[in-house]
Amino acid sequence: QVQLVESGGGLVQAGGSLRLSCTASGRIFNSFNLGWFRQAPGKEREFVGAISWLNTIIYADSVKGRFTISRDNAKNMVFLQMNSLKPEDTAVYYCAACDRNWCSVAMGHARSREKYDFWGQGTQVTVSS
View 1 (cartoon, helix red, strand yellow):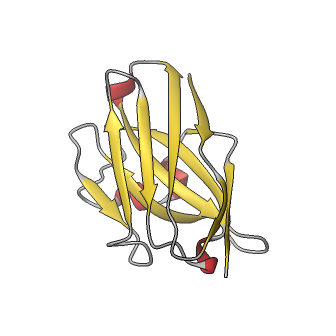
View 2: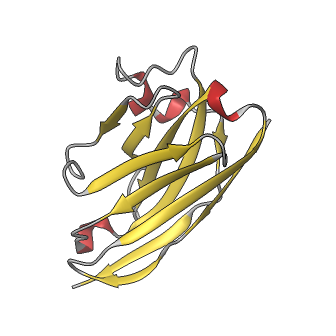
C-alpha cells in the first residue's frame, strides 16, 4: 500500500504560479512512477504529467512549457510547479502512483489513469481571470 497526500493548492490570479506537493508513505518510493491528474467540475479526470523512477517525464500538451514535475526520492515527494496559470487550469489536482513495471512513462502508458493503483485525496486549484 501507498498513501499519498497532496498540498499546495489555492486561489491564484491568471498568470500566477503555484507549487503542488505530494508526500508518499508506505512501500518503497522508487518502486513507483508518479503522475499528476486533474478533474474540473463536470469533466473527466485528465492526465497532466508523469515522472518515472528514473526521472523520465512526460506532459499533457495543454500544460507543456508551463508545468514542471520533479521528485525527491529521499523525501518521498513529488512536485508540480505550475506557472503561467490560466482559468482553464482550475480543477482538483490529484497525485497518483503506479508500479514502475507496468506503467512506463517513456512509452506513454503512464498517461492512462487506469494504470494507477494509488491516489491522493486531491487539492483544489482555482485560477481567477
